[in-house]
Structures are given as structure tokens and as C-alpha cells.
View 1 (cartoon, rainbow, N blue to C red):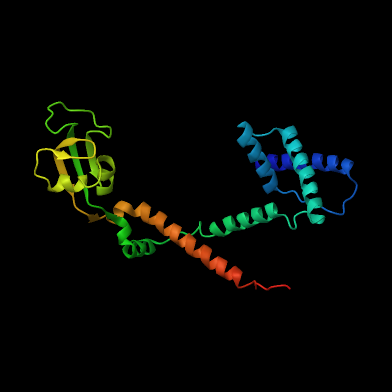
View 2: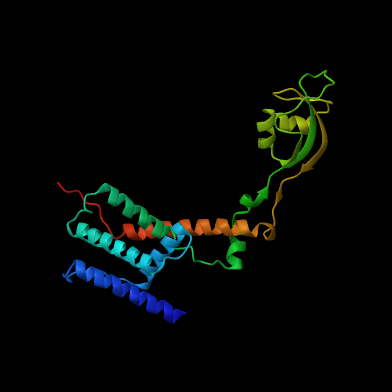
Length: 241
């Protein structure tokens, strides 16, 4: 199959070269074509049409790319890329993206991950949470329950989550109040099936995937900053009168 593919590519390039030769006899500037370019054209077509291009379509793709490329090269030769802020911003963005992807192939060792976990334990602490259910009454003396917009049962929720649903201070009331009903911003509540989960450190094995993601983010950021510093050392800012 590989031999057939190579023959096909050779034929496609041959057809294109004949077309190009008919368009122009000036061979001063050569436009290189390789397997990588043909693969990119093939993949772009397949992504758009959900199938591979046939011989004619691939030839047309290559001719179209060639026509664009010669215009691009001519524009560069005329200096159209100079003093163009859009081109400048695009190149900056592309190089920024290039720098940020330099560390993506790095594979940390188990010892590195465990060391990172130990150094950043504060990130892997499960906060103090509670679980509970409640009956909601709009009035304190009412015997008729009402529908509460946020639901009846709350599982392993933090103080911030509870107070955002019931109003400021409700979390502490749930923990400390001995009254049958406690008040919220919206009415009165009877709490039942209360469970308390103290703060605890999540084990490395239970959160290994998160540790890996955090490590790679920190590692990539560090490498990016190091590369920026190296680039800065190559340039000096001077003022021209």
C-alpha cells in the first residue's frame, strides 16, 4: 500500500508541475512540495467533506495551494508584511503558542509528582462539608410545606454553597441551632439527616490525575517564563532620536 501511495503522490505532483509549467516558465523561485503538505491538504479536505479526496480533487487542492503560495511569496518580496500590525500580532500569537507547547511532551516521574503533591498539599484538602435534607415553610408557624427552589437534599456541600442557596449565616445555624426550625433568607426550615464531614487531605492515589494536570500546568508556565527570559537577553531596547 505504501508503494501505491508514493506512486499516487508522484503522479499528483507530476500533473501539478505540468500545469504550473504551462502557467509560468520562470523557475527562478522554487516552491517546495513534500509529503507533509500533501497530508495537510488531504486532512483539511477530509475534515470538511468527511472523506478523502480523489486524484483530481487532490490535484486541484495542490494547484490552489500553489497559486496562494506564489501570491504570499510575492507579498513578502514586496515587504507587505512590514509595518502591518495584523501580521505582527499574528506572528506574536503563533510564537507565543509555540513557546507554550514546548513542554507538552515532558513526562514527569512518579517521584516528581509525589514531591509536587507534598509541596502543594493545601490544594488537595477536601474542605469541611455537610450533607442534609430539609422541609421548607414560608412561615414559622405553618404546617404546610412549600417548594424550595434549590431542592430538598444537599450532599457534601461547603459553607459557601449552603449560604449561597439559603442566605448568609445559614451554614452555622445548621450546625449550631437546637431549634426545631431555623430561618433563612426565604423562610423556615426543618433540618434532618444531617451528616458532617471534617476537613481532610485527599490521598495522592485518589487524586493522582489532578496532581499530574497541576504539575504540567506549573511546569509549562515555568518553561514559558524561562524561554521568555532567554529571548529578552538577546535583545536590547534603545531609543532613537
